Length: 145
Image 1 (cartoon, rainbow, N blue to C red):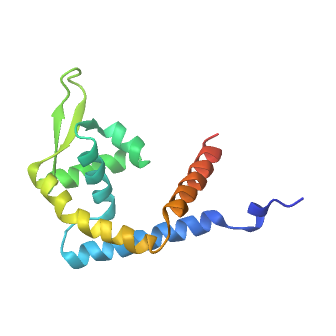
Image 2: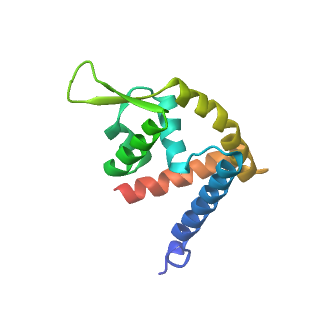
Image 3: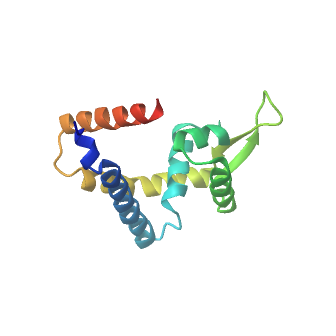
């Protein structure tokens, strides 16, 4: 018996949707003159919500490999948006924070990101969101097993 997912390329649908969102958001960033990539925004967003986390934690939270996270944080540091501080409990470990300029960049960019999220969500309901999250969590869990 054929399983419904055998003939439905839902991974392709997820991937193309993510790419469409990323491209549209990057265009908004470029048009607004933000000098920021979507990947840089993702790191800034996580640091804003979780100040003083390690690069390994950022890697886990963003599902990006450690060298990529290091490169992005280096670029953000060069822009004056992030800084590394030595951990109090372990001098070999550095924690990453947004600078004041990084927090200001977050505040500047967030309205554009929020508008893109609203546009993408359109007239879908709260129930639609709950179903979407349940389905995505289920797929994630199934693949993680």
